[in-house]
Length: 463
Image (cartoon, rainbow, N blue to C red; front, top):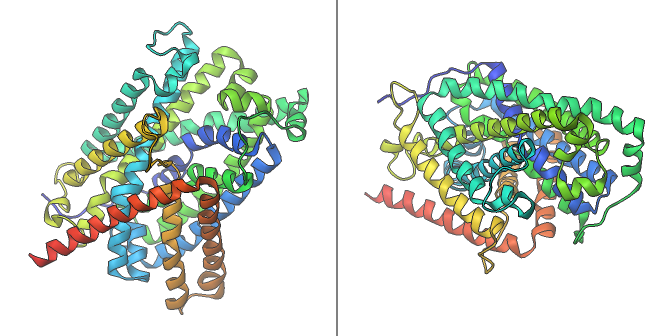
């Protein structure tokens, strides 16, 4: 067994990691949610995408400067440790290893399975399902759940057995996913202008079961899921060639691409279907309306592939979660979770515990968010609230960066960190207004998991 990860990823792979992890299910999955939250108010939805993108960019720029100065094992953990201190670095590492990475990965495995089922049903309307598609079979049927578990296992196998193959797969799926998005960005706008659909959607709303009491906050909170993931690229900090230069470049270039693509895609979708259709049937209906049945179905397949590209990137980070803690000599059994296989150059023990945590979070997501059989306390949205938590955990990092980094210019030391801090606070406030009591239940779970992490580390040090 070795104990160090090799530098095997170049700048292009790093950019694809940023773009590929972020652009995936969120833009397809949350476009419908944002319309629901705003009652079909298209301009308000676009404003939410702009605000979410601006917050992502200022946070991303701030961390890119940190990436030029700090480099060790895992970007965000390195930044937390260098600015706030080793104890906070451990807490950040424990959080992303036990909650953030696995919770997001579990949701994305399901989203990928959902879009795969929608593709199969659209190609073959008579596709046999225990729960018919019209009754939600593509969302919570046993076929969808089986596919979710398959994608979970497949993504783990690719990353655990061949990290270089995982990097190549990430690059390929990033290119593939930009095809349907690019077509919708261009053709959707032209189509909508010609038939008047675009102007109609900007002037009319739609009927929804319940419009959020704070639609802008709720919509921005939903964009957090779609925009999130760029920080995950920092998990391969120690595996990027010339990381101090290439990681910041990847973050900046990737972030700009993401924001532009999201906003233009959302406008393009509005040219392909009415607000009501988008709310009732999801963004994929716009592809069918514009490109017809055959080409529309092919593009749906591309969407499913793009979602799996996001799963691959998330699983890549999940496999390294406990390793980032163990590499610092902290957490449970650092000598075991810090081991790197000499043949695959992967932290296999860390990968196994990561996969187990993904399975645990998926069980929670299924019972509380999909099947809704768990309706009592401790019900919260595990796709959004862990993301909001990380924005809260960014705050001490930004504050300490401004306090300590006296060698930075005014823009790097104060202007961008203050904007990033304000944006992060906005996300937290939006979450409170949007999720209400769900925030309380989630915070209780968060505190318990963090307390376990502190106890485990303290118990190890006493031995």
